[in-house]
Length: 423
Ligand SMILES: CC(C)(COP(=O)(O)OP(=O)(O)OC[C@H]1O[C@@H](n2cnc3c(N)ncnc32)[C@H](O)[C@@H]1OP(=O)(O)O)[C@@H](O)C(=O)NCCC(=O)NCCS
Image (tube, rainbow, N blue to C red; front, top):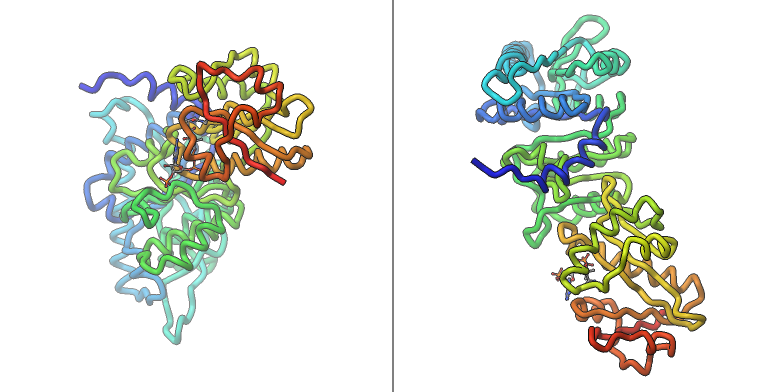
């Protein structure tokens, strides 16, 4: 048996707190249901529900792309209806009874479905009457909210009805996006059967703002049509005021929990904001800064600073925060009345390094120094010499430092002195 990992649990706690009461729309692909992974996914969803997350689940009944721009005739609609009924039964039974042999045994989960989506026909597409293939006309978000408020999980199928009583098949992704935008949800989570989105160098693309997502679509011709569809849908959904869309791969076990409750995550987040904006630190950040820099102080990468010192100088710190965590920090202090500013306590959390946070933060700090009318930024470092060289800093001797700094220079530490002119 795996030993209980107390650090994992502790680091998940702020996420548990942050997600409480939030509305997440989660899609369930047809492959998930077909591949036998559904019962594990239902357990994870049940866990989210017990942690106070309000869930709207949208399940697919057909291969998404195949249905797009296609006619759904009466015969096809009949087979889709049969498949939708089977999916719904399977999901409802898993939520009702399937938890007996799991740690969630005894937990009562109420799953409700209903005519929450109103449809309209997709009409004639490229000269072809799409018949029962429909689009979302309206979402009864009040009814959905009422169910969520009653602590029910809302389960939506890819079908809907028109006011005249006709029924339509609507692509599950379109249902999920429309519901997320109209409720509105805090997150749309798309469980894809494709592998996690990767950068060209093979690393996972953790976060894209809308510009980056659009650039990716434009530049990367090799992206599969399905991934292209997911990214496009994510961009459109973010533009409709859903703050965050997560693209998760069902090939990653426990992807939902990993993405929502760990620093590193395992999918790709697409968001309208920059997510990790740099902001001035406040007194509430002292604890976060301390836990970020403590290991670096212990390893000697950073000079030791007490909590009291940070508290006293907090006005000179900037931080990058993600979901309540300080993931990077830096302090800028003018050296006496000189034209020099010192960057101190410069660190990026190991889980978030190599994502450009360091470069963004140092640029921000230099701009801040320039705005204060200072001419040079200096830093003392024992470990990041080459990194600062790449940011345009040059190694200098101690005599190039302002007198006040020469006096306090710790020769035992033997830090390299790096200076950049910012005029
Ligand atoms: C140095 C530091 C701030 C860089 O942060 P970051 O967010 O990873 O930086 P970026 O994403 O902008 O840059 C990453 C690039 O710099 C490289 N890099 C990171 N640390 C480096 C170092 N010490 N020396 C040389 N290159 C380094 C990475 O390999 C990466 O390059 P690659 O993409 O070609 O592989 C971070 O590694 C850190 O916090 N280090 C410990 C604290 C420290 O030494 N602070 C400086 C003293 S004040």
